[in-house]
Image (cartoon, rainbow, N blue to C red; front, side, top):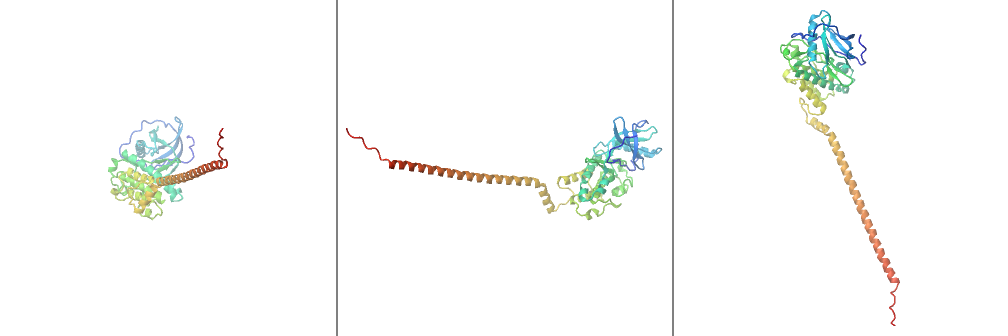
Length: 368
């Protein structure tokens, strides 16, 4: 049996599993599972995820496998293991090992993540300020998806339930079960994804590219901002109707959620770049700034330098004023000392004159 895992709730999020497009990569010959299996973390249409202990390295892991006799799910899980393993990024759950059990069923071991889903974070956030603190995880997820796009992989099922957040700021994009290569996405398959988070072209079964994942990221950001999940029709006017939202974040979400695929960010990197610009106080490319907003941003951006400069100017002014005061005091002191010296000299001359007036000169010597 597996050792007990730490507190905080280990999470492994999974959905229906990878599609069986293409040949499933072999995972080696059947052999005994090199882990001590523990309790079930979750079950889905493709199989189950269990805690396990790796006695060779002395660590807890999560192991995903399929139900006996489910050959279709077995092929999809093998594909999912290979697809996820090729994404070596801090924001993607790492695959440690994969293989086939003695009965031939495929399995793969991955990190046992301790934390919660972004979906849980949204539900537990008490107000907008708390939800805005979750935007950082959306940015991190965008960077992870941008990396996947660079590797020619689409996620196709982005939503808050598939993003895991840890107690030390970790963000993990999980559940790559519906992932496919960009080459495979050109064929199009209707209804692959989660209603409300799927792009219009995804619902229609049209060919896909990175902009489909951009739509999912936009839906994720919109849910963080509004605190409510989308309807099957999407977010509609919910973003505009939610008071107090930063206008720039609303613009980013709306641009990512555009119905027309050509109106969205070209890929996840563009989405992530605009979110990063918002965090860093730079201008967001897709937001139309008013003059008032530009002035406010200018003041906010230069607030610290202006404050430092103001303090420096005040300090310099005080130093100059203090120096002037000291100079004037020293000048007055010098004048006083000069006056005292002049008075002393006058007194000395007066004493000398009085001494001369009181003592008549000696008589001349008598003639012999």
